[in-house]
Image (cartoon, rainbow, N blue to C red; front, side, top):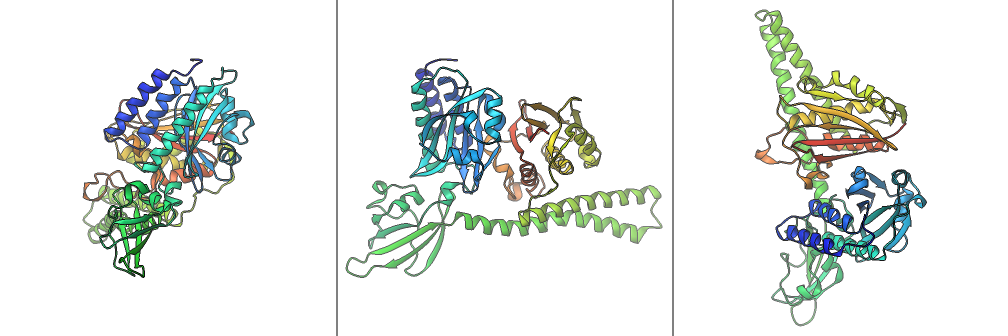
Amino acid sequence: MPERTDYAALIAGHTTVIKMINAGDSGLPVLTRLLRVVQPAIGAASLAFVEFAPTGGRVIAATGDAEWAIGRPLPAADPATVCLLSGPPLRQVRVDRIPGALADELADRGLLRMIVARAEIGGLTVGSLHALYPDGDPEDTSQHAVVGYIASCIAHMYGDQTGLPVHGDGPVVAALADGLAVVDRDHHIRLWNPAAAQVTGRPAGEALSRPLPFPLPPPGQVLDHRMPDGRWLRITSGELPGPGALRVVTFRDITDQQRRDHDRDLFVAVTSHELRTPVTVIKGYADTLTDHWESLHDGDRRQAARIIGQRANELARLVDRLLSAATDSRPGGEPAAPFDLADTLRAAVPDLPADVRHRIVLDLPDDLPKALGDRRSLATVLTELSTNAGKYSLPDTPIEVSASACDGTVSFRVADRGIGIRPEHVERAFDRFWQGESGDRRRYPGAGLGLYLVRQIVEQQNGWVSLRPRVGGGTVAEVRLPRG
């Protein structure tokens, strides 16, 4: 590990990242690449970036010895979150002096020195960058400057809002204030307040004396307009008294409201579409049994009854998903207790859907430590992850379920050899109703609720779940739970 910052490697790597951006890449892939470039250049054992939203933070990217923490939430009330959001924006801390389970797990791995820099936009914290070092690793003051600089670069990426924030309810979207502009008779801007610059991403120097970057509604009317970056603005205007025919324009970001309205409409559409298939099949076979009972052989009757039972089970699972998602409730609810994770996974396999069950390949060690959580809910987690794996892979390929333990966590993985997942989708896949494809192009059925509910279940048990592309093709879903 170098004792001095390798500026040549840093500049060369940063140049590669800039080329990625110029080629059209954005969001999480660029952020992850940036961390991988910086880590060896500053001699860190690992780098991690935590994105903050009003409800808390989440590790969205990490390298090296902290890669296991990807997907880990940091609730707003967590002492570690409070510690990270207070104090100077750039500082060095002892990891073993930060309260909370995450810091304990880092310390258990020998990562005891941390340089932390907050990524801020106009005083608003969008995330924090962490460079982690082993205890006793020689300190280099240039490391502080580089970490602070990289945090500023990441903040700039958030300001551009090209793929960031990863989570739609992120702080950049949630904290935008009302914009205010004054325009002349030609709709050229004469006044542009700081909030207008934040909302539109156009500083005053680029906006003044130029046309508005959105349509202007008639005086006294309201217009909802979608910006090129996907955000929605609610725009109002009025006439200013006096000469010059000036008009005042106010606008605010209503992206969250639009998303809620969209989710409501999507819920209705998804419910009607997804319920129709199993109900149609059940009705068809039930009518066949009723109308042709005497002419059917015993084997045909059993087959019809078996299909009705399978479809009824699918219908029950779908209704549970829809109800849980509609109420935003967290399934489970049993008190956390130590349980045998390997035994729980083995016991859950026979209850999987038949088309998935025969593809499961188990690799579970006999000496796996106990996990802490709700044993019953793990059957639901395995069902959702394995069903998802089966949906996006060929019917004759295996679905591998493996488990392991390290320090304070016990984990299991569900890996398929299917179409894989794009790096920029590894977090979005957990959003409610999110689908990789939409409309008539969708090749895979589903309500887009399985992974959403998995995250709800696992995080209720103080664990976390993440997705990543599988080496050689496919996807790996990994669930980590506290050790019992």
